[in-house]
Image: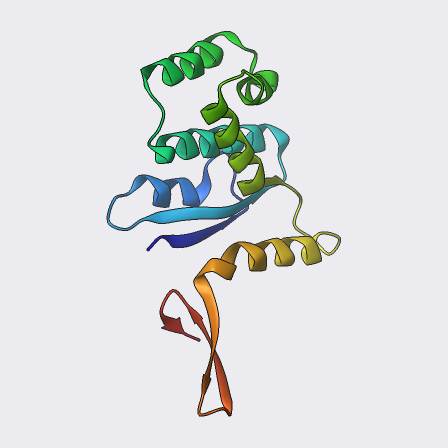
Length: 145
């Protein structure tokens, strides 16, 4: 079962990228938040690359399209060119990346949105368990809290 990773102040790759690269467990970045636009662009591209690789469906031709665009497009439009290139696997990976990587400054004005997003992304790993009808506990990936 995948282990969810929440990456705040993510920078261009953050701690989550290290988790995503290791093979001891199936760590999945469920949300990353970065306020700097350029760092977010990199973060989003890395998320799309991971999603495409994880799909297991990308063939050599798909990767040639990806590599060609990376080599030829300006950095500030690369993600959008990938998303709109016509390859359905690359598009799906980019849409997944848009959902994963948020360009937000953490603070009072975004606290509710970030909290709601984190809760929503963790829902597949959470369940509430009643013990003898009186006590409730939160279980995240088999760990009681």
